[in-house]
Image (cartoon, rainbow, N blue to C red; front, side, top):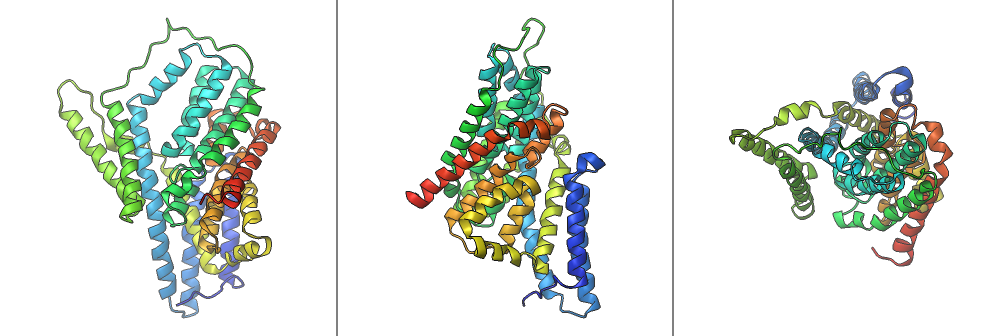
Amino acid sequence: MEAIDLTSTWVGILDLAVFVIAYVLVATEEKYEINKAKPALFAGTFMFMMIGVYYALNHLNPAPLHEEMKKLIEEIAEIYFFLFVAMTYIETLIERGVFDALKYKLVSRGFSYKKLFWLTGLLAFFISPVADNLTTALILSTVLFTIDKTNRPFLVAGAINIVVAANAGGAWSPFGDITTLMAWTAGKGEFVDFLYLFVPSLAGWVLTAWLLSFYVPKGEPHFNAATTEAPVIKDGGMVVVWLGAFTIFIAVVGHQFFHFPAMWGMMFGLSLLKLYSYSLAKRKGRVGFDVFVNMKKVENDTLLFFFGILSAVGALHYLGYLHYVHHLYDLAGATATNIGVGFISAIIDNVPVMSAILKSSPSMGTDQWMLVTMTAGIGGSLISFGSAAGVGVMGRLRGIYTFGSHMRLGWTVLAGYILSVALWYIQFEILGLY
């Protein structure tokens, strides 16, 4: 049974208006001091409720609507539980002091500002494929601020570098960014397909970082080892690191070879974390941890935001609005449209943009799906609020890393974006690596 086109009906117009209003509130959450999860969750649930009312008033068969909602719940659950487990592991690592130890090692070795700039960027690029770009950017921006709270040129250049590196690092991993996770769980590419984006993502970030490095001041930050106590990783901290790596491995193997949802392997990894916390607590002289306490620290507003925004896009898809995305691909072609997606995601945010593309499901090969995954991910770096990583760092470095400070050096990000796209074209279209 096919869903009817509802774009010209009162429910289609109402739901579109609700989506636009909710998205404006999401984009301006700092101005109106409203958490982005609230309007997103309201829109996602309310829009489907209005479709239900429309069906009831017009005595339509609700079976197609029910089937659409069941499919949507399954898609969202895969992403929701995957992120939930990943965030729980990160919170456990924070509680065990793993990241505090990393921060101390960086600031205590007498590195220059330029060396710290490159080190934090490298860490962001290689941590985000596992820990996700938002978490990585938040942790490393905190490290950056700890290094020197007053050196504004260093902080601005370093913040942009971390945002670009985190987004670029997340682009070549199926679980490094919400957009890559969405594409992977939707079956638009195998695990190895995303690895082909490593070279374009790395080169684009390196070019941006190299250009930004000219704005990093010379010298080194002051550090007094005598008055700063070295943090100690708590019992089991490094075991949790390896458990987290094993959890990712199980999720990938299960998804690739057994066709399990990726979240199934992640939930198995969560069970291992719980069992380890139990065994650690039973050992004499060891300081254990409570996984449930760490779960409380998980950013549930982020998870609920994803639930709401993906539900809202699902409602737009059911109403028939996403057919226009098909027309755009037919009109401009896949390559041009997918490159343009990067600029759109910088303004609108990559999550609803990628969700809309996946829902409309234009006919594209894996090479084009990898392109749009990459551009949606790294394109968010073009503007400070274009990605979750950028918004997070703006919050951590309030008044220092701003829209204006980012845009003054935005040309460096654009140069890296162009290089990434060019290398994708060389790899996929000229050399035919895929």
